[in-house]
Image (tube, rainbow, N blue to C red; front, side, top):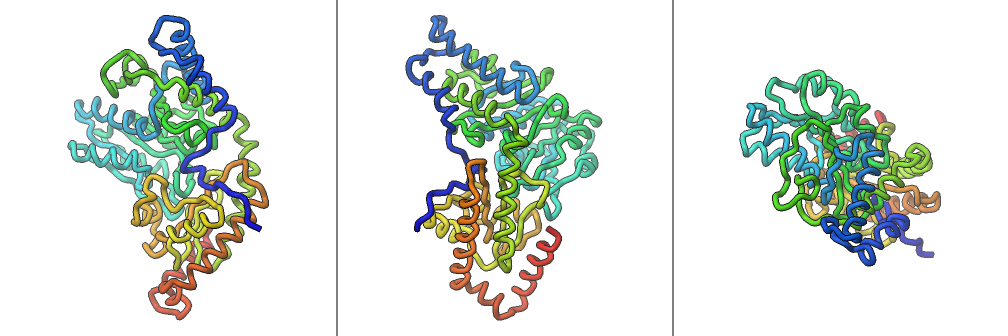
Amino acid sequence: MKHSYIYADNAATTAVSPKVLDAMLPYFTEQAGNPSSIYKHGRDAQKAIEISREKVAAVLGCTPTEIYFTSCGTESDNWAIRSVALRLGEKGKKHIITTAIEHHAVLHTCQYLEKQGFEVTYLPVNEDGFITAEQVSSAIRNDTALVTIMYANNEIGTIMPINKIAGICHERGVLFHTDAVQAIGNIPINVKEQGIDMLSLSGHKIHAPKGIGALYVRKGIPLPNLLFGGGQERGKRPGTENVPSIVALGEAITEACSDITGKARNVERLRNKIIDGIITIEGSRLNGSRENRLSGNANVSFLGVEGEALLLLLDLKGICASSGSACTSGSLDPSHVLLALGLPHEIAHGSLRITISEEITDDDADYIISSIRDAVGHLREMSPLWEEVVNGKEHTRKLLKFVSEIKTKS
């Protein structure tokens, strides 16, 4: 019997939750006033925006005036990084520190700044995708303007030691920004207690619609305009506000961040079940730390398998998953994150990312496991590389040895 549709790509995007949809719907119809208007419908819309701002601030542990609404995490990352570079670069601080496994919203912004005369240090990660606070400390210079390091990786789920990194930055007088798009709703965050200066988040990862995000900027940090044209977002990001989506974000972040630990418990159990069920496949490798990762993230590479072909077979079985980052799904290049872990191209090409939510069941997990095992077996029957593994070719023996050694450590 054909199994029902299973969505296991929540790190790419999430469905809008019923509660969030109910909250935003009135602002498309009977409460569709422009927030800049002085009549009641306009005032009500503006009030709804400020209530949502309060909700976001409450979750992050900051004040509402430190929250700016944006269109997405990418915009928030760009605004945070470029604003610091623009301001401090004029004072001779033209050095930025980040990691080799950041989202492209950060990496491409840093690459743009390099063309503008900035120097960027890309910290290497270990085989599990971690950096240390000591690495950050060693990289900080007198001309360092900003350290920007993601809270949790979007591909392998690695959770960085943000508290320690932020502490080092404060000791050295350097601003610290974190891309927390994957962390929000999965890890309790308090920007004041943790010493985070700037933080980016996105709504569509936590069951709000696509096209809404936010940027936290600590009070006292000057924030140059993103755009020019009006007085919205305290004059920093003018343009008529997307009221329905802003309302949705406030509702979604409140819902996502209530009882994070409790919701994660069962998700983590089923994630471990999936990992245990597929990591026994010969020539497989878990990418990232087994313990210190997001509760719903499982990223595994299969030697002798192309990730794109694996996704297509799983799609035929009704399973939605990902191979690498969703934002680069059209690329045939292996993931920059997996390459940064030290994976050879032949192994990085065969990656599969499963990201589950609290809606998954034990039956779903069993079906995912059996479907992956079947698909990997089918693809290897047609794989020249796997045929060389079976026949014991020298270069493939080295690849198999590499996978086995990493699996033992995991």
